[in-house]
Length: 489
Image (cartoon, rainbow, N blue to C red; front, top):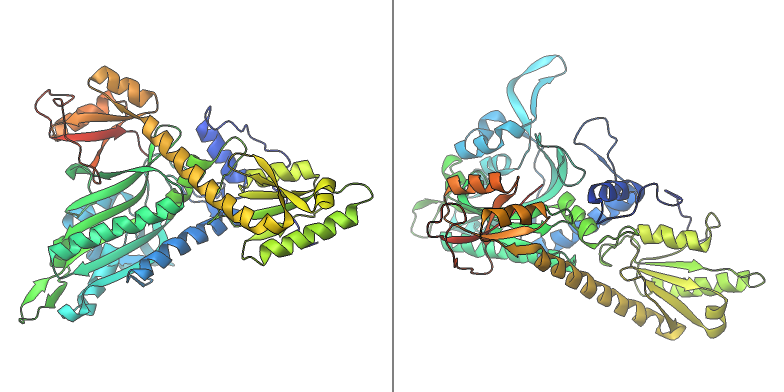
């Protein structure tokens, strides 16, 4: 036996109806497909399980490789931040104060100064940036780390989507000029755009309104992914920090003329936990996970269908197929376990989202071919043994193309233009993203949130220029932005 399957469930103990009850579907799938166990006895904290964490590791690898190809050095900073460092940037501390986990004691001894678990790492990193950067020759400085973040969320916690401990990658950069920082913002957006494309995810790229930007930033740009329940899921953000942090942390450099200047900074974060949630939510179906081949822990599963009198021949042929696929560098397993019947194995691996299933029965043995079943559409085709590997590789490409197209189609159908309050209520209440004209006043933004039943102004398109054609939805004064309104996690 080349692989022994651990049976998580024999038939899902939850109703597989994604569109009827997304929340139940999502939570049930996280548990049944060994993604996450939310029964940890501290609210907002969960245990990552084997299948899910293997997916997480591949997402991290995909992102880190791209960051390091563009000159970002990997670092690892301590999880604790001293209170005095955290308090230096007034806007920053005001933005995170309510979410901080404080450390006050070591054993029975009270600490001389309070420490906090990082809610983000600007105030952890930048005191050392002031030591690392002395001259223009030290710039640009570009670092990144993949770590756990701790925030005492006051809203209802949700596995992966809103947790008090979650995984992310954060990058921090320092530059000699505003022009270089602007260029870095575009590079950060480009890196995230490439990663999300490889995952088949669709989203709105939005510049946040000033009242909702990152605490301490000049401006913020966010990737808002659609979710089946009508909410948006912020999977990544990119921030231009200007000189706001370099002034308070005294991060300066000496230019070619001997003058001392503040560095200009950017930072950006990709939520690993939320990105995994988006992959599950956007691509999954009533059968379970549907995984992009690049991040699937297993890309191909081979299921022999033994027939009385031909068992040895079918198993031997299955091993030959296994060797051919594995030797091509494809992550594959041969499920010749006797714990489940072939039909049960089909359902099992469909729930786990394995992109391609290879079925081998008596007819396949006789014709020296195999039956391929693609996870995204469940369509089956028969190919010869000689065409096996290229056929699987083509299926991977077709699956990714289909996942991207379907996700984009859903996003486009989710966006609704609204011109009055009644239409706004209907759109947001109907699990849509409303596109509205807005005057940019916070008073009207607050009124939009009130009228939309929790839907909020998420921002205007960063990547596409959209000019308002009608007055502000609320005050009827001339509008200066077209913005998107949705409920959010």
